Length: 564
Image (cartoon, rainbow, N blue to C red):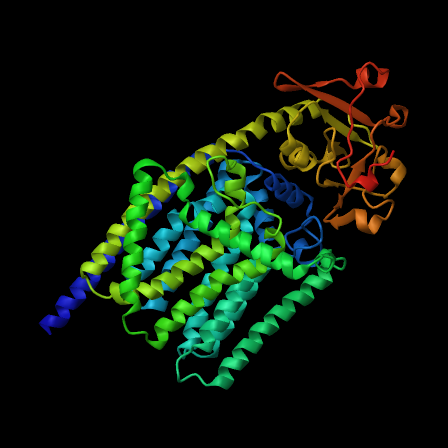
């Protein structure tokens, strides 16, 4: 009896220490991320906000197109954007806070899942702390548009918890909960399919008491959820736009190229070695060395069926992300170096967010035998954790500060454009606004949606098409009647085919347009021209129409569409 009381006291003390350590980790994450609260929106962030403003209601994304290109079906993620836009408007700090809360929730879900997988609270804490503090995690969180990844992984990890319960005899209710959560993850982003694969791996290595017929039925139901998602997707995206995959030449070569790029990028991002210098590099080296030594020792410990299950599920979750993302990665540069722009560092982190969680699950499974008692191995693991987490947090903090500064470069231009457009007399028909002389490719890429994302009153400019000397990736506007003559000098990128050049979005449309060089200004009575000068936009419409200023409009689409 006395021995039992002593064990209980030790267990409660250990729990208290872990909760305290977890609170310290959360505080460290918030401190590292805090610079982002003074940041602004970047690239696709504007598009998500603008799309949310054009949606008539929160359920619109489930029944229609909601992301340009008609390739992606992510209605639950878009629903969250709709809610956050209604709650926070265009207040960046609130949106960053939401992303950070989601990331912390994901780390908490990973802690819970890994603890139950490994039957060790310490193993769960180590995995969650490494995930929460690493630049992959905070880099993904920094780009607001990566909210889809955060939400998808949250549902995936929660679903894997119930999938684990089912693999250990919890019954069909656990399976139903897992299937529902996996479905929610898939409706958030396609990367959740990695969770489907990991769940199948869990069930294939289920306890001996779970018969093979039960396992096969569970996997069949998982495939049914996937089929239901594909049915919903095909109904909402009739012109799904994924035909480009079938047109890729040498697909096996592209697959191999995408896989090799993912692997190289994975090694760069997971270590983040190129951006750790001085004592941070030395500390990280000590941490990696200790983890490697402990892992080698752990490999010679007994491999129970449950331990094998953990490692297999983690590796499947990690590696399946490469298979899911190869079409995109075949055209990406995922190197990490001092010369790599902070925009690339942040926006490319998403390719490894789910993979990082999977690797940590597998690593926890390998190290589990060393986490069971308060021994030397456990103390060495704690040293390794500190040696890694501190450099990662400092690197993440530097990443957050650099990213904040990059976003603020967009803020001045966007807010100046909004202020100047607010002073214009907006025509009722054929409204076009040209923001000239910006010499900023990012602003040109998102000019239309950036203005419509943050302008206080959207209605007056909801029918306007806004661009620099180049057309943006897409316009989003209310279009009562699609008429090529009303677009001049803009034109659909695929000729006059409305089905290919537009997508319906709520009460508006996505428009994919090209720009004809050397336009006839007499045919542009609704056009307004603003020039970027000394930190503000100046109305030069009169000069342009008088012929004293000729705007250098450019075609930035494919060569066959740049004919006059």
